[in-house]
Length: 338
Image (cartoon, rainbow, N blue to C red; front, side):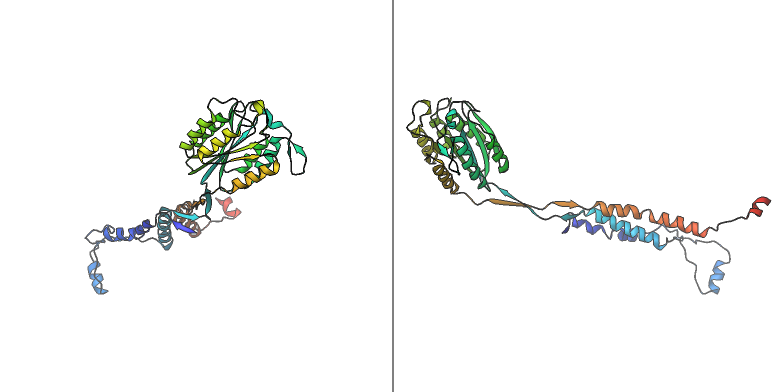
């Protein structure tokens, strides 16, 4: 679609006519030709001599070049633009951070995959999260992994392919053997501070109790509540385990309850899959769509045409003079006589 950026500049089109009317060509109020017998000759022909200089008029080529050049200049001034098809961009209304425990106990082989084969907890978690990420259209998703300390694996992004790749690269113990749950929540809060999206959700998955945090999980949850972050906790593994691998369900329940989230426990792959499908049903606002139509400037075309027209009278004049000038062709005998 063709549009004009400055259509009001079309008002300058009649400007040359106004200039010609307001400031006509200079004329002297005296006889243009002084010859003694001109008045008598004029009376014999029934005419009256006029005063003023003779203004030479150019040919039609010169007039065409002037008019066409002016039209081209005005066409460039109004800045014609071609509107491209609209580009729609969906504005996310929810930021979702996934915090995944990579402590040593996540390597325990007590889960089964889709084929029914025994696998470790992290592999089962990655399979479920992979499906979960595929369904996150319209959300911005981030990924935090934690062990001895938390690390941002992926900041908030709508490029879900990147999240899939970074999740696939995670390994048991790559962040250390301990479980810094409280620090992971604290790091997520820091990442959320740079977000202006209205809905903020943190999903924490762990299989043990907090063994290495500088900030207690309950205190981190209280800060998250003040920041408007809802924390959902998902536990995997055996709640009857002892030692550092013991699953502290009470802490996870308090963390979720403080922020308005829920706590869930999965003892196998099917239960874990069901939990994340329930998380798919989290209420969210309708996604906002921003439409933008790119504009492609076309002013250089009429500008180039006007520049080319300025050479037309000179080129036509040269060609005309060349055609009018007779060519002299001498015979060899004439050349010898010379």
